[in-house]
Length: 146
Image (tube, rainbow, N blue to C red; front, side):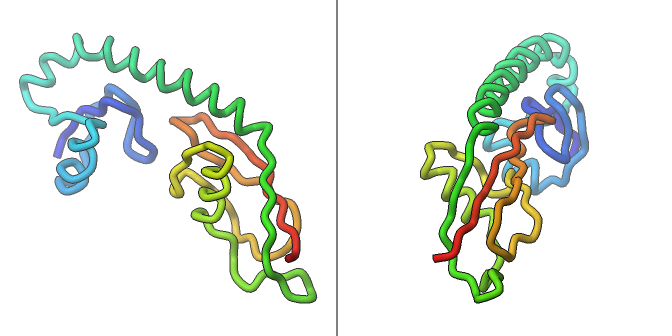
C-alpha cells in the first residue's frame, strides 16, 4: 500500500515521503496513530499544501528530541543485580529493564528505541537511545552486585 508519512518513522521513511508498506502495518498501526495517510489521488494532489504543515510538525518534533537528548546525555543510571563470583549476571540486561529505569527518572522511552549490546557482567556500559530520526543519545548504565 502506498502511503504519505506525516511523521518520520525509523526504517520506513521521513515525514512527507510517499512510501510503500504492508497493508496491515498501515491499517493497524500507521493510520490509527495518525503517522500516515493513504497516498490516493486526492491526498497526492494536496501533498504540496500539506508539506508545509508536515515540515512544521517535523521541525517541532526535532526541537523536542534535541531538548530530550540534552537531558539524556547527562544521565547516569545505576542498577543493582545478582551476579556470580566471577561478576557474571544470571541473565542479560533487557531493553525493558533500562526503560523501567528511565521511567523512574521521569523519561518515557519505548523499549524498541533502546539499543544495547549483550550485557552479561558487572560494570559500566554505554547505551544508545534513538530519540527521533537521526537524533540519538548515549547514557551510562552502571551495574553493581547485590
